[in-house]
Length: 351
Picture 1 (tube, rainbow, N blue to C red):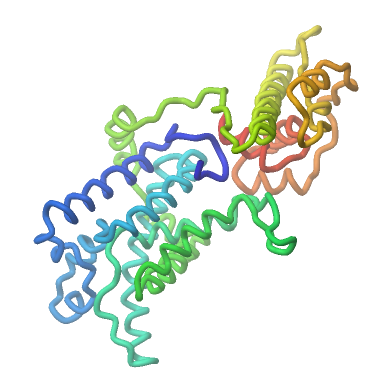
Picture 2 (tube, helix red, strand yellow):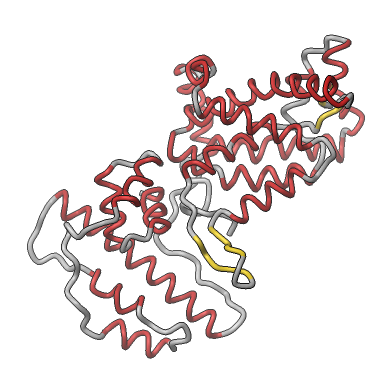
């Protein structure tokens, strides 16, 4: 599944879901059924500057006219939905509105700079909601922790964020002037993320519009809450399938442990069963352990569970707090995941 953090699906992300459905449907409509109207949605900077067709800054920056661009931007929006879950739909919409507005001004400035410095004439740019998509790489780079997953050839490190950057690179190379849109999006993302000249206050969605959008979008597009059970992996070999099943069991046990820690913090009770003692024995299993051996290891009496005030890495706590989580929640998630920041982030995004 194309996701780096958080649970699957579009739970608590109605705006992201609408950005996936509506522009994609309009792109298919213009490409297959109404190609004669595509010229109205071209992002023609020459027409904006010479013929004063200002309306093209609106129509040319909403609908993609290339199916490949639509597919890649849709994958990125699906992955970036974690920001809507974390900040709320209104703040997420404000970021998109702010970077989309700033991107229009930066596009014109970049085109003029290229013409002045290199005598390069930029008449047509790729159409669609691309500038805010590239702008979302700024909070993605700054706030999502980089967790190594594996290595290629013993030298190239593959992280939980690598696939997102690869899709962004694919979108960047889809057309000759896409790099102008990408640079414009990154610049506007930095300006908005750093709140330069108070743009976050000037370019934000009004509260009344946020309430209206919540009333209209949430009943229609709100996704169902993900269940605690994850789908069973379908590896190529029996060993891979067994390893996937054990990894899923690890995750379920960690979720149970985190829920138990929170219940103990809210309402301490004596004699509550703590499943945390199962986790260390599962983590010490071999890579190719059979299900029978794994079950025997899980049933073997393990060490006593760690206390609730067990030490956590302050550096990991600080990184989670920078992502917007409270210190108490960050500490609980890190204790439950044995200081695994990637798993702790998944816990916090799912609860």
